[in-house]
Structure formats: structure tokens, C-alpha cells
Length: 346
Image: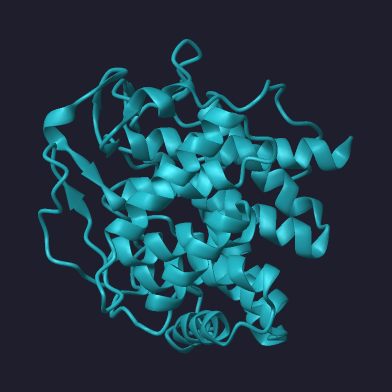
């Protein structure tokens, strides 16, 4: 990436219109046909926990958003088993249909609980922390699940710096990433291929540097994030890892490109900028927002300005017009980060 992006594309307030459309008394519908929810696919904690994250970090919520945050929080706690694992799938009869696990849903649930514990009002915060503590000593065999959970631990540590469970979880996730990465190679990554939500991994190292005082992890996180941002930048726009992943020597660009990848990059760049003040990271955040607005490999916007929804993917010849929960939440999360940057620059 050459030069610096001098301004953010103008955007109004973050819209939650489509998120309300996808939510009902049972939860947050996972899929949509165009902008209409598809009830037949039911609900999942992966999305509900992500919904809790974005609603909880809205700086000026109205009553409707506060109610939605409390509802999402209740759903996440209801999905938790007594041993700290989490269900993921809920049907239209409001029954959990799978066995509790330590997969991504566990990690994202802890991310949501940690965010709610830090940011919501006293009663909701106390409830979230109680359920976070029930699961914080568990460990997943999957790196992504551990990374998502560690993001929740980082949220807890911002408010309670000495929380032992959160410190242990964040430390363990960071050590895993550090140990599995060959820092002497041209592939400074703990996996043989990029997968999804990739920037979550360097963000964990940055959080460990900031909140645990691990300067080696911080330096490694900045290196990893810079490498990833370079890999996923083509000229003046992002060209992100596609849904099938990407490995050394494979052609670019690849499709379909998923909004979750950009949201993870936006979060990591925002944290890096907050920690360093380096314009490289604010520029990266600008590129993330711009990707949703059409500065991408096919020059098409992923934002539906009428519904407020986010389209499900960037394809070779356009976009996937369906506006499901994951893509809409990724769009909202990215716009939140860009709005924070605008506010800081005012």
C-alpha cells in the first residue's frame, strides 16, 4: 500500500434497520432471501453473539437498541450449558437442536459476553460477567474459536485489568499464535493457508501487548497485521481472501469474498491505530469501509442503502444480493469502527 488515504468516505449514522428486520421473538435469523428473513433456517448463536457485540458497542443506543442488547444477551446465556460449552442452533420452536461444543459459537459467545460485561448497564453487565466466568477456563482445540473468545477476554480486561480468567485466556490464545508461527519465513502466519476472519489472529497479539504488557506479542501482532493488510490490498483497494481461503502462489483475486473478513480487518486496524497512532492503520480502516462502498475488485457496493443491510458476498460478476445476519453485522461493525475514527478526528 503506497501513500496515505487522506479522508474517510462520508457516511451518516450507522443503520440498524436491517438488523431489527432479521430479529424477532426467537432470535436473529441467520439467512435472508434478498432482504426478507428465511425463518426455515432458524437461528444460531454465532450470529446472535456477533449481534450482541455490535449492539453493545453502539455509543449512543436508543431504547430499542438497549432492549435488543438485553434480548441477545439472554439468548447467549440460554445457549450456555452448565459446563461452559454452548449450543449454536435454535429452531422455530425455540429449542436448541445441537449438542453444546467448544467450537466457534463458544468463542463468539465469550466475545459477546465480554463485550456486554464491559459496555452494558450494571445489571446486564453483571449477568454477562457471571456467564463469561462460567466458560472462561475452558479451552477450544480450534484456533479461531480461541481467538474469538480472547477478544471477549480483552473486553473484560479493559474494565477489570486483573481478572485472572480473562488474563489466562488471552495469554493462552496469544501463546498459541506465537508458537505456531515461523517468524523467520516469508509466511509469518500460524496456518498454512489464510482462512476466515484472519485479522482476528494479529488482533489477539495486539491485545496481549496492550493489556498484558507482552511487548513481543505486540511487535509480532503489528508485523502480522501489516503483512496481512499488504496481502489483501491491491492498488488502492482491498482484495480479500475468498471463502475457500488462500495459500502461497495461488491466483488473486479470488471469489466469493465474505464481509466477515473485512470486519475482522477493520477491528484489528482500529486497535492498532488506537495503540500506535500510526496512519497506516487508520488508512487500513478507511479501506475496509470503502470495500463495502464499492472500492473492491468488482466496483460494486455491498451496502443496500434502502434496507441498511449488507450483501452476503462479493462475486466475480457482482454481489450476492441476499442480506443475511453475518454480512449485515460485518457491515455494521466496520461502519462503527469508521465512525469512531471520524469522531476521534473531529
